[in-house]
Image (cartoon, rainbow, N blue to C red; front, side):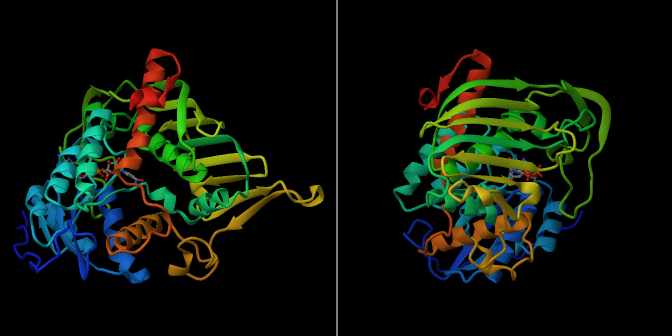
Length: 424
Ligand SMILES: NC(=O)c1ccc[n+]([C@@H]2O[C@H](COP(=O)([O-])OP(=O)(O)OC[C@H]3O[C@@H](n4cnc5c(N)ncnc54)[C@H](O)[C@@H]3O)[C@@H](O)[C@H]2O)c1
């Protein structure tokens, strides 16, 4: 087994994380080193290269569970040191922000410990696997906010330039009063041969496609429309694949994805275990501005890889977006003369489009990782006293999405409408 690197990031005379704004540099600790660990590593590494930021970003610590793997991860992805004791990073003077990229059931413990240590926290979505955990996290964030400590949640799709443009167009009144929101997040990797990774265990994930995918489209609908989901009118929750193959390798069992070097390492047994989460959840809702809305999340939509899509219809126009064509936003302007009305496909790569001026010339497309890079840049801007280009979700904001997730499950199980205010 490779030795854990013993060199430690140099300690520095730092402003406490709880002062109003940081100056100089932002020291990071990343907790979790697989799929999102890689996405966040790229984000923190590239944000200072593409954006002119008020703080230097120091990638000081990567924390995982296996010493050799975490060491290798840190080497590949440019972290100065690695550890298998995430708690030691929280009180380390080289850390001002803790980035939580671990499965949902550990978000609460890690985020609250970091907030109590006075560290800013950027946590993956959903805020937590359960409402109770999320409530504790929100309360801890409220308390920490009084000391100037900030929270962020990685709802990265907000920062796809086309989604950010949709948000701006709706805010500018381009589609007028909203009548309908139609959102679906369709993937197809959760078929019967996919083993029982943590994403299929409610004790770790909380829910299945619901917390994983509906969380994103609930956030996206709220973000683009500027409205809240006020009532869940009805919902369906279904688990089609009741049993899945157990995974032998305990670390690989946590992941549905490749290891830090991109290799598939899952070892499966012949034994089966029970899946305790949904494979799909669909629901109907009412928005605070009066619109009707429908949502669908599934991992069994054969042929759809990452089809995160939304259409919004208003009295003056419509917008639609699908992540599999993430550089494009479709816009229908109903105020145009009938003779020239039609869907306009906007290639969102002009320098006037959100974030684009920081990346490439027009027509040179951006990809999945750019959403994370842009979010990391906005986090650094905010911590350095500047303004985010597009509003950043914090724990308070993600709590609202979590309440909708809960209202949906109650509606499905009780077979009746649930007002989201009943959940709070
Ligand atoms: N924003 C997005 O689009 C997006 C995409 C995928 C996943 N996610 C979220 O990111 C989080 C992580 O998902 P992932 O896909 O990276 O998972 P993963 O299984 O690929 O990686 C999980 C990491 O957490 C570590 N870990 C697991 N349990 C731990 C524990 N008890 N203590 C310390 N470390 C632990 C593992 O060692 C691993 O490094 C989840 O909350 C998930 O919902 C978000």
